[in-house]
Structures are given as structure tokens and as C-alpha cells.
Length: 511
Ligand SMILES: Nc1ncnc2c1ncn2[C@@H]1O[C@H](COP(=O)(O)OP(=O)(O)O)[C@@H](O)[C@H]1O
Ligand SMILES: [Mg+2]
Image (cartoon, protein in one colour):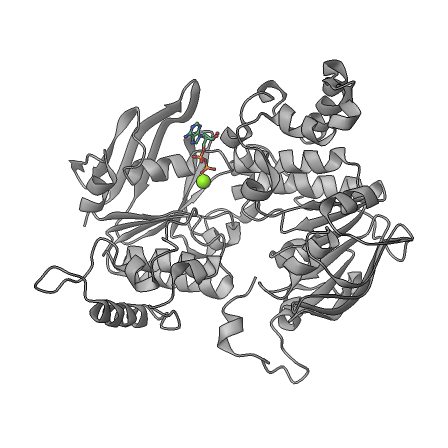
């Protein structure tokens, strides 16, 4: 059995050195966790190992043999297979077609037999314990989580010696992630290697036999499981101590409402929901995927029609568009910064000033000094790289991109902020900054409605947490009652008798 060894790999993009002499060793039979903040170079390493990107220098060995990974085909020849966070499943093909892409079973005429394909796909899915996926379904109709599962299945069916999972569990709930790690463990037990990255520290600590921490393009720590505690891992990742990930803030209770929602219904997804968000209050929404949270948030942002009453700052409002919402003082921070928030080819400065053009322009001309005066403090508050204001936002790390989205939102000076899973897929350093910002906004009396798929976050940041289940708010937890386990029980639909209301199908999709 051969280990995988990465020796003094260097990689630059233009003038930016991303990997600076990186070393890494994975032993046969182990699950190896790769930790590091956004931008530390994990995906770059992953792409080099998959033959997608070429290193500038350095060597990669399997056992004693140096291997050439110039192309994805060469990587696959060495049975190095990678699952990326960005989905590569083809939406216009069925699940079966995706699974067998490039490996289709053929009859004598070398034509794909569809029946055979479906049969073999069903068998393969069954062997992997995911027979609830329908081989005939178009991949485009699957949820993001299901597509991700198909990606993993596809890699597993190609008999990997080295399986690389780059944020492969980011869009998965606990049950689905557990499935991924069960498969990883099975591979490792047979002597193969699994190398994975995850933003969920807890996941890495639980499943990795050994952990390598990258910072700024080099490995700064390599340890076996349990050798160091969480706090130390975070400190090593950041290169400095986060005194406390979650800021201390005074508990906010029964203040004047900035947002009052009365008997709100949205399509068939949200039913008769009522609640208020007070000045400075952070009201958490806990829900499994698809319980109506998206519809709730987007209707409050004027992007979806709703029935019922919405009152903002004491004024009944009708929100027919985001423009109405913005005018009323409501802003939304979406989860998907790429598609919803930003103009990727433009710089940070540009993205920010677009929001306040009306304040900046006089007679159609943007006043540059005014622009600097408004934007620089915002960048400082968010610790955005001021020296890189002109660089396209698309080349920034994910964490910095999300901060630009926040910057845009804050320039609107909202009184009520809708935060929709805005920390998902964001590195721990940026998370800490977002939390700090939320605490500051709370002190400035901004009311926040905060949906997060991370229960730990809800429990540690919110003044109250309401649980949304099948489109209804079924319970509100007060500050002193906040407890992850109790919230989870309600969110998965456990009734008084502690019996699950809906069985496995829903339970598989935990947040
Ligand atoms: N194609 C590219 N062109 C320019 N810069 C890039 C490119 N890909 C990645 N980078 C930069 O390399 C750094 C490391 O990125 P990445 O490997 O994706 O980090 P991680 O996966 O640890 O978050 C980031 O600063 C990113 O902006
Ligand atoms: Mg990455």
C-alpha cells in the first residue's frame, strides 16, 4: 500500500503566491482532514491532485514513485478521484446517466442499453445504501443535496484509491454527511486514502484520523485525531486567538417591534405565520431544508407575493418588490453570494458604490471623494482588503465575497435585516467577523431575522429562536430555553410523544 506524498508544491496565480512550498502526507488506510481558512489554498491543492491545475514546482508521490498529474485523465489513471463543492452533475441527464458517464455499459453494437443502465444504476445505488434515489430521474430535478450525493456515488463507483472530498458535505445535512463519512470509512478500511476538507470543524475532528492545517499556502500543523483540542485548531488556522467565536451581547427582550408579521401565508409553503422582531433583537429561525424558510424570507424582501399583514417600524407596508422592501428599511443577506449578491467582474469599490449611487452622484457624475468617504469606513468595519478595492470581486476568497455582500447591505442603513443562512460555507474567521457585526448592529437597534442551518449558531447568537416546520411556526424558544438538541427535536417534527411525525425521508434532510 502506498502513501500519498506532496512535496514542496508551489503555485502562484499571477503575482499571488497561493501555495508556498506545501508538504502533505496521507497514509494508506486513513481519512485525512485538511483544515484551513478560506483562501489558505486547500482547493488549489485539491485541483492540483486532480490534474485540473498544474503546480509551478514540487513533486507528488504515490509510494516511492513520482507521479505526473498533468491532466484529469492521468489523475484518474492513478485512481485519484475528486468530488468538488461546485456540482458537476449534468442536469439534463438522468441519475443513471450521470453515474455511468464515461463508463456506460454497452451491448454488441456499442450502444447504451437504457434498460441495462437503469438496472445497473439501481444495483449500484442499493450497494451504496442510497436506493431512495431514482436512477431515471433527471439530475436537474434533484435537490442540491441529492445532486451532491450523486457526485459522491459517482466517484465511489470509479473505485478510487485516493478519494478527495473538497467541501463535499457543505450542502448536506447531518444524516447525509454521515452517509458520506460511512462510505469514506469503508474505503479507508480497505487500505485506500480519503483526503477531505470541510468548514465544519466538528466534522473534521470527528472523522479524520489525522489532520493537516494549512495557513497561507503552507502546512502549519499535522496531528492525529484528539491530539489537540478545537480551540487550538482554530488558533492554528487563524494564526491568532479568537477570544470568543460568539460575541457577548446583552439579551434583548420585548423592545419596540421593527418588524411585525401577522397571519402571513406564502403560496403553499408558508401558512399563517405571526411574529415580531424588536429593535436590536436577533430572532432566529430554525428549520430543516424546505420548510418554507426561503419563501418566508423572500416574501419579506418583496420577491414573492404573500397574504397577511407586514408592519415595518409601525407602518403597514405592501412589499411588491425588493425596491419596496429597501424603501421600508428591510435588507436581505442571501446565502448564495455568487448568484444573488455580487457583480463578480467588478471590484469591491464598484460593487459597493452601486448601492449608493444616488447619494454619490450629482448631475449624473459620481463624486469620487464622496465615494471614498462612504466606502472606506465600511471596508474598515468589515476588514476588507482596502488595497484591493479594484480587483474583481470574483477573485476574492469566499469569505471576503460574503463581506462585500454585507458591506452593500449595510450601506443601505437598514432597520431590519433578513439574514438567510449567510454564514454557510464561510470560513471560521469570517464567521467570527459576521457575528461581531451582528452584535454591533444589534447595539445600533437594528432588528434581525436570522435563518441558519447551523443550530449552534442560532443558540449562541439569538435572543429567541422560532422553529418552522412544514410552513408553520410551531414553537418559540426563549433565551433561557435555547438548546440545540431541543430545537432539533422540534425541527425534525418530533411530537409530544417523541415519535417522529414523518419518517426517514424527512429525517435524512436535517439542516
Ligand atoms: N484561478 C485563480 N486565479 C486567481 N486566483 C486564484 C484562482 N484560484 C484560487 N485563487 C486564489 O488562491 C487563494 C487560495 O484559494 P483556494 O485554494 O480556493 O483556497 P481554499 O480552498 O483554502 O479556500 C485565494 O486567495 C484565491 O483567491
Ligand atoms: Mg476551497
